[in-house]
Length: 415
Image (cartoon, rainbow, N blue to C red):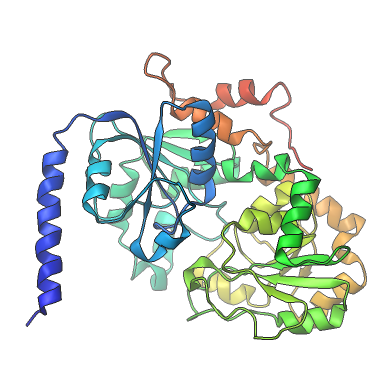
């Protein structure tokens, strides 16, 4: 027999949906944009950068964020938001003209004629995505591919950071949406941050002046439960000595308190709860990664990247990948590759992490995966997506990308 609380939730849910159906008959608000990121975890990623730039370039657009009740404490002061599933949420979803998300909006909303939905995505795909996951039984069993296709059917535009991503999105998310090859707005800060801002971020994190900061940000494993890092960050810091500090950031799937660092660890900082991963990248002198999409963003900084991937065969078998990150081929591998703790420590002790060979690999990787990023992606997206009706967005963003970025926009950029 259902509990009283369960009955109340059921009644409330049905009442809200009934009111929502009424709201669907209201006129659309041409000045309202609803934003969401990472399944309603707060202001982040490409939607955050687009929102910030829209406030500057399209002040006639009011931004409203969707956040889950358990993450509402993450909302910056003064940022307008609605809690998912609330009365205000359903009213906003029924009447907003613009919808911007890097994942999906909750609750099965009905997209109305006249609404425009921009799917920004939240990374360059190394692992298989969308319909390509059908080839992997462990993933396919828990994935509703019909729901994926229904969601794709709502998109009016799909944002891409590079040609590789565009090709993957076309195949795994088939639909009649506009392809926006404009770069990732969340990466703009890597080209615009000043040395003073970076110094302030490092000091705020507790990185001593002159220390080499290594950011270790492993991704989620479908075949593991909980956060189980493939290296001991305290041991690495101890072996490298006092000139180094290791920043550890667990994947957001594990929450803000994933136990990434043991209490009292020396020269190891748990930055899992830090609100902006972009600031962590700016603070780091090098990235230690495995298969995280952060690798492609960090490459914009043109700073050393070390791939530490002891479980590569298991990861590829369980999830599948689009290219061999460990191959050592220019364009596939961003820097030195290690598979044991000893190899990882040696990469830094010997200077291999910043060697000429590593620089060559990184340059090829940046050329392949960062061709559109130049510090002006958010501007291009806002001018295109929030174009006034008389201007019209068109069906291609290629011309706008070049006119906004200048005559050299086809060339890779970096710091």
